[in-house]
Image (tube, rainbow, N blue to C red):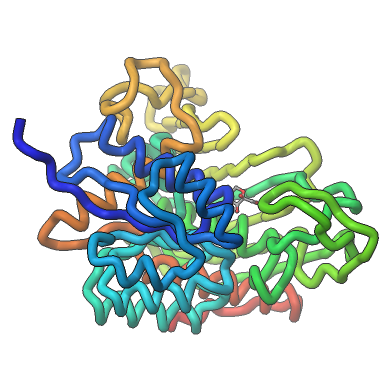
Length: 394
Ligand code: SOE
């Protein structure tokens, strides 16, 4: 058997996203026919023990607490940036200068101005760059895109999306980095609206203007005493929460091929939607039909085909597990469901294919990440001013 080409991988950050990307790199070549097999080289994390534990558990060759060590390693070609948001720009620009291909977690940057510098750096370095909006690569969302591009929905009227969680409803839940403005930029907004903004751009088109509202329901929380990531305990001392707990906004969008600003959009991100654990949902209504997706039922896509004879019209629930559905043919037989982690495997598959291709392009790229940051910036400014704000394209 001919020896398969390999591609050295480095990971910076080893929390929740470390596991998602680590698993994707380990799994991708086992299921997909890849032009190069990822090899886990180095992982960087703080404290060093966290990186060492990750290296041992996932099979990285070494651990470090200095990300520049990974950038100096000539055997590493592809880097995943999985740090808190305030480090994305610095690390990505350094990685681009070192000539590494990059997958960077979302939101790409703290704001659009910072994202613009990242876009410039990856363009200059001519490297493959992906912004980690994983939900695009759930097979049901990819199928929705195919159906919309095939014209199945006709002229688009509405896009309605919500990302609902409830993990911080308890006021005693500690003030983790995801609630500290200088580290995260914003709260539910950058964390969750980033995803649904990207899905709306993917499925429908570009944002023109927005009108937002936001609230911070719990203004002070215990500072974390122990634990990292999405869990951990609070201590006795309290700190001020300086980000939103929820941010909703109206929008006007331009659908591909449609009149400017003709589509009405409605978006909501909250960590206070009691009972909703990770309910990321989107619905698109058009002149010929509608589509809706709910992540907590991620293997299904609902389609209403209004072109059918009236007596046959009704919502069709498509179980997206047939080999004809995007990505599915490489997994299990029909009816064997996929999960959250598969969307990250699909990111890795498409990134490696791009690295080995002549065009060296993959979507969503850093420019898409910047477009999303522009919408985040505009809707945050609007929620503060309580006025409609135009989305400024940088
Ligand atoms: C936390 O709210 C979080 O982990 C997000 O940061 C992810 O992007 C989302 O997919 C799941 O929830």
